[in-house]
Amino acid sequence: MTDLRRVVGPAGEPLHPDAVPLAVAKALLRDMIFLRAFDERAVALQRQGRIGTYPPYRGMEACQAGAARALAPGDWLLPTYRDHGAAMIHGLPVVEALAYWNGRVESYRAPEGVHVFPPAVPIATQIPHAAGIGWGLRLQRSQAAVLCFFGDGASSEGDFHEGINLAGVVRAPVVFFCQNNGYAISVPFRLQTAAATIAERAPGLGVRGERVDGNDALAVHLTVTEALARARAGEGPTLIEAVTYRQGPHTTSDDPGRYRDPEEMARSGLGDPIERLTAYLRAQGAWSEAEDEAAREDARARIQAAVAELEAMPPPEPRDIFDHVYGAEPAWFSREREAFLAGLSR
Ligand SMILES: Cc1ncc(C[n+]2csc(CCOP(=O)(O)OP(=O)(O)O)c2C)c(N)n1
Ligand SMILES: [Mg+2]
Image (cartoon, rainbow, N blue to C red; front, side, top):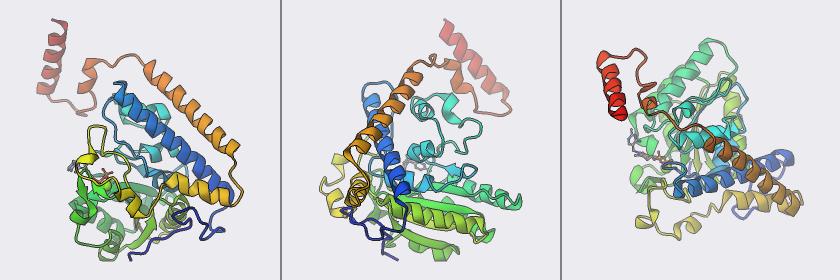
């Protein structure tokens, strides 16, 4: 189970050129160009003090776009803090992704009609949630499915085993999508588990396991599309391990230079997901310089508009930090709010 499914070779060579239509491949490349531009801009905004701490997904765009583009609009996406790329592909407005990392409570819930859960910051808690959501959808005889993102670090949590095991028992229509990006903050994968892969846990949990090259957007897209189809057909969940590489720091507060060899990415043999798909399409005469420039320009304009919208928002109210903590507020909590507000006006 250590083999990686691939459609595009590490240098962009077409291994299975008929597996995904060219139009889909081009749309995925446009998505990834947008996601990379967003990530770069968000890091710059953090450095300029215009948003808060930010976790970059640089290098993981094939996972985020390839998987999220496999969803139907009515399907549910459960992202982590690093998966706002996938969330934007599934319809989260760009300004909401920025606002979240600016600490705006308004953005802690996706707008009506956007089937994206709030990002899970506690590791792996979204895995049992996904099992429960999937089970509920199955009981309702819904055609919707669930795509649950998590990292390699999450695979060591109890919630990973409990959630996937239950989903298997009730045949919940869930795709458990693990982005194995090599690290959990500074912990390398070799110290995460003595198992060679994450996918090999699947049989023990009673579900199907797949292992895919996570820097190959077409292979990711195919693998997730097939898993979603099985989920909808009542064939139960799939655990997918997408092998990728976190090119940047854990967050903008981290310095990977303290624990990681800069040559390691080259040694991984995964290459860069955008360069790979670009080379693949170029080799087939399907991606011109003009198309590349147009995709970059479109991304710049969308991001610019979102930044302008973010910065036109009125400043947050200090009292907002007390909102959404309790459904039914205990008296001491209300008193704490009053004392806090009285302190502000002194
Ligand atoms: C329950 C819990 N324990 C610890 C943490 C601290 N923490 C934040 S990110 C992280 C690493 C997660 O690694 P991984 O699952 O591989 O995701 P990645 O950051 O690589 O996307 C940890 C341990 C947390 N957020 N939640
Ligand atoms: Mg990780």
